[in-house]
Length: 520
Image 1: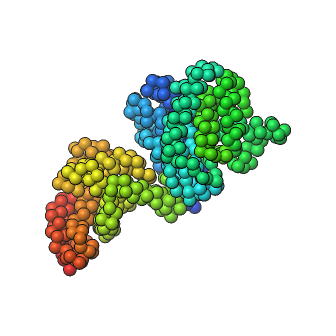
Image 2: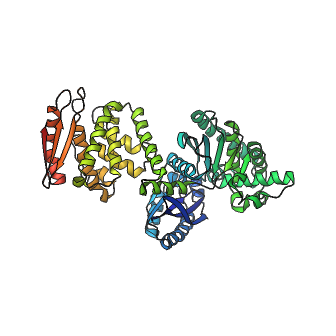
Image 3: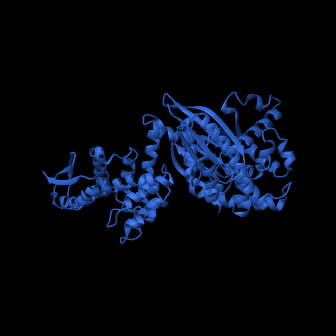
């Protein structure tokens, strides 16, 4: 069974998780973590410092050895907030590529939140009920409302622990003026969350990442000390439910931490020397967020971004898993949301989607496309008219821009680029390897994109007369030709047959077969 590796290059630390697929489930084989503070200089100067780069590369080289030792079949490497903000991010990704051979994928805040949500709802007990997820990392904070395992609302805020420390907490202990500015900034950012999320009525709040772990453990120690019971550290491995924190405890702890020196913070059980350096801002964010949204507290989960990455790799490799069904549903919801946003009538786009699926299945021996291109074609068929929202003239160019630059849940930037290219070439232009768009797509995907464009052009040709009933099509494949037999709808099929015949020359150029069209 395959083995997957997920590498998360965060603003505060780098994490590695390796898992194998056993009985359609993931079994963890190896984990590693290194605090590298990649975002520390980014939030000060806008660039990653050479020292932070070198420290991260050392950690990644160690991860690379572990990945090789476990003979991972697939490795995904993502970077988050610090790399999104850094001016010299490209230089760092090139260094990673030369040191490890890995391509770093810089993901958006919303995609980061989606992957964290996927990892939590896949593995965390109770997470499929209505709940709120909070992930406060080094550079950003993602807050997600989930119901039935599906994302209902999400917001990404610039409230990471390292970011806040570098921008506001410059003395030890912090001075009152800095803390006041920090609280003002947090309040401004959380107003965005309030506008997007409202007051979510949830039965469970799940918090992930190091800040949440430190607050939960420190709060637990404080409660245990107050009640004279054994410390939470002894119970930590007994059950996940023990790692909880109440809002009132978090507020008291946050105010206490803001007045302490770094050495005093490090001495608090559960925080430690590394976390103490960046805990002040993160603690205040949690206190304000929980109070503002009217939440009683949170439960800590050790799951995170890397678990979502592994879950997605499992879903793409094993179509029988429940997480595959969830991911496909999530992707399609993202496509339909974009259609709604840009005024696309689904009843008009749906026949094109149906025809492109029929052609994909019937001509599989001809196009030989990877299975995932079926979804890419469906998505392109649904979103092909998004550009008309901007301007009817040149709308295919606008469509390409919208798809490539929109946040569509479940689609990576590279996948959105492929889908946008398929939708781009439905007019007079044809894909060319020297086009700016095609140059941004991996060379190994060029042939797949060109063949997909042909299929979508055929599907569009089958939907010329939208006032009539949908034309049905039957395909017959021969060694040197393909015959498409049209079954006319209410208004006949002459226009569709004429449109298909216009595509015959391009079909022959791409597939080296003749395209014949017959009307039944």
